[in-house]
Image 1: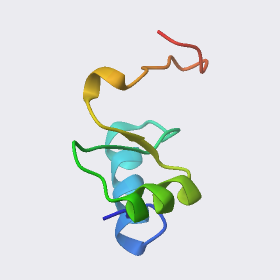
Image 2: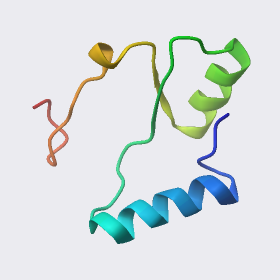
Image 3: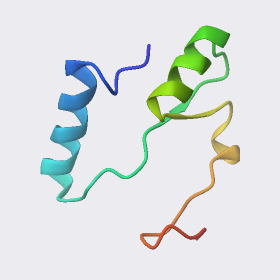
Length: 66
């Protein structure tokens, strides 16, 4: 399930930002199985999708690859 635009998703982002004192700049989903409709929804919502953690590109605070 994709949550970023739902109340639950927004509250998770706010919770993380408050607890860690950092702004969320990326929303990601890592799942070995992703329904095509879920992938389309994620793209519409600006959520990055990955099938394995090794595919995830870690970016530094400047937005460049680390």
